[in-house]
Length: 243
Length: 198
Figure 1 (spheres, rainbow over the protein chains, first blue to last red):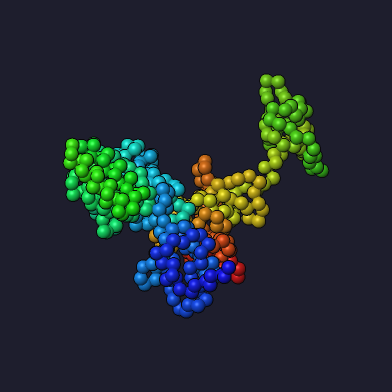
Figure 2 (spheres, rainbow over the protein chains, first blue to last red):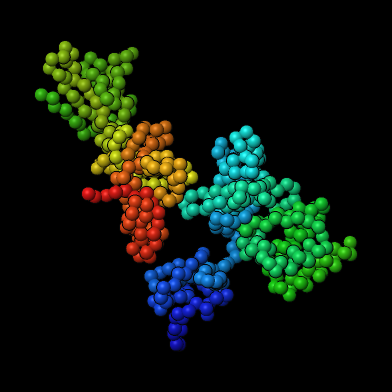
């Protein structure tokens, strides 16, 4: 058994499946380069090691990270997530965003929010919010405004139904080119959908049968390959048209 | 001669220490008027204080010294060493471990509010860039605070983070009053650093 030489360039690992313990880069051969390490990578002395199983991704000029799909969400600043209100306090709403700790949504973090018009959210209200900061050891802070202070699309999601998914499916739903099942259903049916990067998505339509159909179709498509997804979509659309 | 006699056996609250005619009730004891007996009100050891020779009342005073009574208690104005337990948006909680140079016998909680972290630009303080959970800080007690915690302040040059662990797990070296560096990885982390030494 010959030992595999540790490669000095990570390009052999990009877009490949990596597991914890893999050394993807040996820093002793590089000079004067600044690398940005994202989630799932760690610097151990002179080598960059993988901490999480997944695909190694690279973005120019110097960003590396490991992408994987989990049911658990790790909050990070700038993400748009779907949260459920679990409690109200004088200064904040406590919102569950599927992370390790409850997140705080300040009562004033709304467009035109003052002490006089604090929104009254009941326990169980579904919100589309933005993560402002998610420092380690502290509860994440949320906001219903974008960076400029406008309401944008954030706020309460009324009616409809929320489905749970994995973080990988959420990313696929938000990526371009669009998810084939989502695109196909969108051409035939009318519904609105909000996707949170924390593994939750919400669907609303005029008829509840449409909501259930879209939600189940998306959840089921996660385990299917692209070809299987196209076949599944065709079968589904045929059965919609027939009734 | 004021010789305090400390006894070996422990007493518990409600135990009879003696008759009111023979003893005066001191700290940790009380006199029950209806049957004129002195009872203990704390758990601890009995201690007898002889009466001062000039006083007309020649009864010795009995006191009960609780085990926690030997430990130091934070007072406003003293410098304490505390370990940060939780960092929140506008304050940080810390467990007080030493008062001055003595370690405490029971747990005291302290709070460092955002406006007490430093002396300048107190409304722009970012708690996460000043403290992290697990840091050892030197702080001064501003007040007894509320029922839950003492109020602490690090708003002086000599107060602040004394020792902290980096994300890689090693003890960091202070490099300025706002930054500490990890010797293993070279990463710089922001903290409110205390000025130690001459």
